[in-house]
Length: 417
Ligand SMILES: NC(=O)c1ccc[n+]([C@@H]2O[C@H](COP(=O)([O-])OP(=O)(O)OC[C@H]3O[C@@H](n4cnc5c(N)ncnc54)[C@H](O)[C@@H]3O)[C@@H](O)[C@H]2O)c1
Image (cartoon, rainbow, N blue to C red; front, side, top):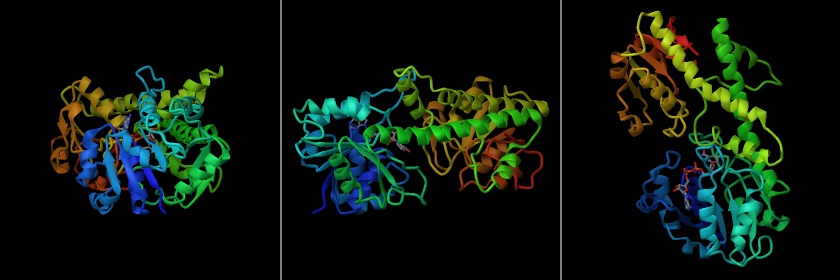
């Protein structure tokens, strides 16, 4: 018999997971505190780009979306996918996680499996989640199973999905690991087990820190090559011809999204308890946070070279989400750049086929040709695959390309990162 799966937190991680289990014929009890999301799921309307409405409608009968935790009593396994943000002091904010675990403890049943999927520091599952669940009177590892399994979803990606991306998993006990393995095997082809929840927690952080540090490295070089008059894109292309020992990372306007600007700091915070300063993490964060300022300085210089100032200039930004092919603007460097340019007195507008409006900037996406026609300077911040960047290069009065996507456009006088 297929198990009943409970999922807490129906965002970018939780909703695709709920759909995957429902597609595998499991009954899914999907819990979120956001009543609008529950209504949308009930109406078969997806709010996550990676989950088409038809797909959600196709499994509607098997996903029972609710705000009531009590419904989870019937689940064989409960997977927790709530946010793990930072506080304004850049410390882990476990508020949503502890709230959800506390609510789950009130309805926890003997024999259930609980898996935390939210990214967090090593020790969270054992030291924070287990004791809170044990307030139910049940003991972790004896009366219920507990494990950590990080989510590896890459929004917008279609070649690697939940099904063919190996899933790392570490249980509190070997029995917890095996129980969780049996559940995840329903939706994943390959399960990679590690010896503890801590090892699984740190695996996820290593993956994200690896990206953050390497992006910072190439970004720092981009600032240097700007001064040296060397083309960073040419250098990255050439280095990437080495068949071993080099991995390509693209320079750009900085890091965005929910993960890379946030997750590494969960580890640096935890490391302080062990008298350790994780300097790579801090340095990478510092370099990447500087990038929007560097990009704005490039815009300033480009305008200056044509006798214009930023103040009063009409600047059209192309692409405001944090990465190509998605509409997610969380932590997007484009927002920082728009904000900095506006502070300097620029008249900013944008075009993004994935982001209809930016309420925080009181802006709506403008049609591409209209934007190009009006702008003194066009700035490519995020290069969506469905935008014709050659056309952007041909129709811009002055173009700053922060993604190197106009190199083959044949237009000579483009300013690049
Ligand atoms: N988005 C990604 O690409 C990605 C990739 C890998 C890992 N992660 C990690 O997965 C976790 C979830 O990320 P996300 O992007 O899906 O977040 P999200 O903000 O898109 O979704 C989280 C959901 O949890 C709900 N929620 C908050 N508190 C709750 C509570 N107490 N009870 C029930 N529901 C609650 C929110 O309403 C929201 O719908 C985070 O730890 C994140 O770091 C995200």
